[in-house]
Image (tube, rainbow, N blue to C red; front, side):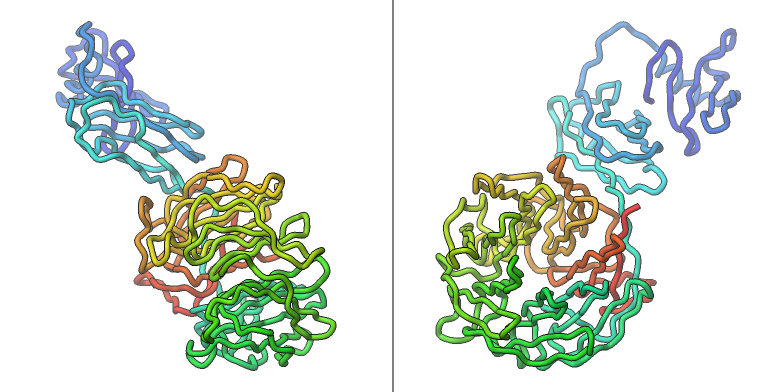
Length: 490
């Protein structure tokens, strides 16, 4: 039941929503007249059960109801067709609604009272509610429907570039997929949705960096080689014109899981990381000059930074944030070649992701809590104007990769198969962050379950290419671990 207006009510009969009213002159236990919105017609329903339901709905005893009032919030409902049920009551929620309330109270002690009877066609809706029994009114039941956007299977790569590969958008619109415990490299062409093998890397690398240079070449530096046993200082260049890899100068220090950031002057800042020498966690940083092919030392970090983020700000400085076991953040100033302090993050984060938003703020999501702790569903924003990190909306799940979309929103993907996603639902494998609202909404899930090593790449056509990280191939889908997919907005 939904409304109690005179002798009318709305309920579900045989899967259809109908509005019914008593027929003047007829006993209520013999017949009622039902109106169907879908057909626009009235019809007679001669069932004593239905009539009894109408009679109970339309009766007015004049006594105030006792019990618990049930209601909550609605997010992202773009279409009509959402129907909620609470015991023997039903609510039909129109598109655009932000709240719902069931008219009649339910007995004290109810548990998980609200269910989704049907969702709008083309939308997926999920419900979150506290565990009962409830002794007082419940107003925080949350119904969330998916944000826009869909995933579709793309072509299959020629090799399984999984753990620690890189995906780099080239100036011609193609994407270079390189490394991941293999020397095989390949190109993705969005125009034809195909992968093709290109030149072989000088070294099979993983957890290296790949940076598009101003001259159109790609610098691949450091990483683990020889089966994840040695961290290397070597680097190489990929030339799209010839489709070949060639060696370039070595870094001063071997590094893996470091950061590489293209600066405004065309040089590349290499910072932090980890190696297999006695130094283990270098605090040094260096610059690569594409005109000479040489790495030179620059300022040193204020502390170890391993699995941190590095973001080029609009003022030309680089924000280095987080890393294993720290909430420290610092700024690199290319003008002085030195690192200086800035505000600390709200939380300790190892392996977070940072995205420069169109408004100049930096979104930092996820990562791992204090050393080797749980995955994080929290997020925060860094404001370069005052150097302060502030909490923003919390993710529904725990995610490890992010990319800025052409509409200013941020797509976050990749869940974790090994870490506890404390306080969040690990089933949500993809979400959209809205900078204006400061909130995350889940999208329809990727076709394949993907974890921390997934790489999202924004293409010139506005779609996002996902490669690597496959952990689940649903039954009946002709996909392999090397299969890529595409995210598209309407």
